[in-house]
Length: 250
Image (tube, rainbow, N blue to C red; front, side, top):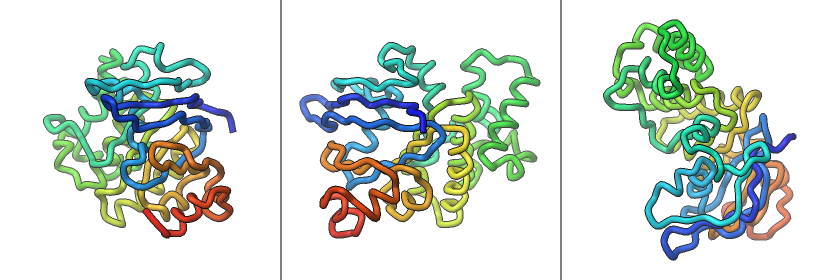
């Protein structure tokens, strides 16, 4: 699998507190990479570094590099980067004052799309890709926040997909959802892997097994093990990994 993101000796700090240490691995294109590990091990910080949200927090800094298609992301315009590397957060976060349609169209408008037919087509394609079109086609003018929790999360995924990203980062996207909504998001992830590099942070080890092709295990800000999901879960090379995936700690 071709590498989409190359992480090269990445370290990160909040003030004086170091939270990532010398990470080195590659995220392939058209596959799902899960990042697992106990709370506070740096999983979400890594995602925020991958689309340069980390630097928006005062006092933070990074060393090392993340390359997108071989190009350091530090040299890219942050807004352009975030169109290429989309982000879905832990809790559904539709824009509260916008309709379903305008939530999805927001990124398109940011890119300068103004013609109504182009907006209509872009919103339609994104909602179809997110598996939401049939549920909201008669409620496009309703507030985005009027949808159920699972629908709101798929709306946020549609919003990210509308600008045609190359990478989709998902930070615990199912943690606030019920089992039915979770199953729908997982089914959607399975479909998205054919077109995107998907990176999902999850505390749910069973979910990582179900949805991912590769798994990275983080512990105390360090990458302990990275490989195929089958290898990491069933043939761990590191005792610490084995202890975590078998529930001996975490």
